Image (cartoon, rainbow, N blue to C red; front, side):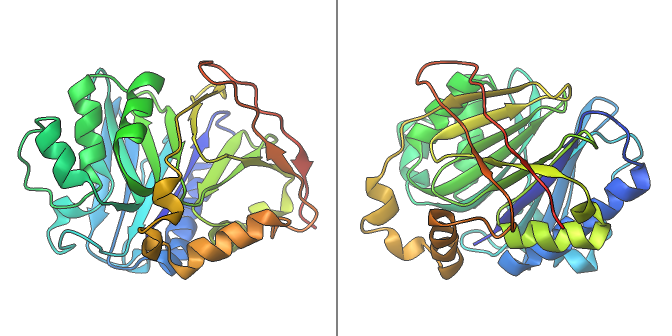
Length: 295
C-alpha cells in the first residue's frame, strides 16, 4: 500500500508559494498510505529532478523551485526492497527517448520472471516496481505503445505515474485507485490515490473553495496530460484474473473501500463523476467532463 500524488499547472496563474504549499499538503495527507519513505519529481531547467528520503512526508520539506509546472509524488509502505537504501524508494529515474520519473502504487509479482524473460540488466534496485521502468527503457520510448506493452507485461496490482522532461504527465490505471481533479479556473490538475487524500490537501491549501471537475480514469486507461492542457487517452488489456484470483490477498482494506465507494457516489458531495469514453486502438480519446463545486 503506497500513495501517488501530484499536480500539473498549465496556466501559471497560481503562485509558486501556493503550489509549494499544495505539494507539502498532498505529501502529508498521503501518509495515510505509507510513511516508510517519501519523494517527489519535477523538471528543473529541462532536467528531471528527484528528491526522496526514507522518512515520512511530514519530516521532509519539499521545496520544488519557483516556476515548476508539475510535481509527481509518492509515499511508500515497504513491501519489497529496504527503504533505508534510498535507491529503492520512489520516484525512479528512467531514460528512453526522453528522460522521465516513474512511480508505482501496488505490488507486481512477476518482476523476477520478467527480468529473465526480457533479458533486463542487473540492478541494485530491489523493488518489484522498478521492472516497469526497465521495460520502458528497453523499448527506448515513453509513449502510448511502450506504456501499453509494459502494462500488459506486468502482473499484479498497479497504478503508475510518469513525468517526463517536457512536463508531460502520464497516469496508467490498473486495478489500484486514482482520483484526478481539474481546476479549469486555476489551470491546474491535482491527483492522488484516494479522494480522502485530496480532500485533506485541498482544505489545507484552500483550493476546496474553487469549482473543479472530477475525471474518472477507468481501469485499463493510459492518460496523458501535457503542459498545454492537451489531454489524450489510450488503453491496454486488463488482466482480470490477477485482480480477483489467487492474488486477491494483495488488496488491502483501503483498496476494497475504494471499489465500494466508486460503485456508489463520490465522497465529493454534489460531484458528478466524468466518464472517459475509450475506443480501443485510438491514440486520442475525448474525455467528457462535468463540473463540480464544493460548498
